[in-house]
Length: 119
Image (cartoon, rainbow, N blue to C red; front, side, top):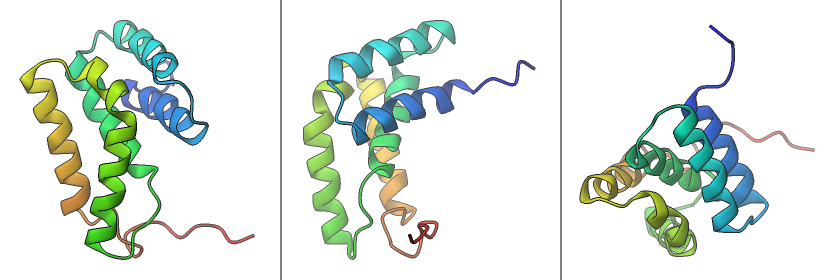
């Protein structure tokens, strides 16, 4: 193996950096598209990884209600980016499944996250 990053890791890095640095959605889309072609992936492959990555950048929530509000804000903010990749009904279903996985897995809970380094 080439020891390079997997498609998922590359897209995750692009999206995480984009969200944290508030990069324009078009620029993120262009970078992800490059990885999509390089790895011969589908729009659905991209949208599923992107949705999950966006959710993983959210602040830890104290309650399911807070988590839901946070997810809703993130989806609204990044909808233009997700729409570029979640084109078909199947792609959109994959995004919804990624959101469900995140919420059901309790990924939003304080206890479920790795402890942050205190400085």
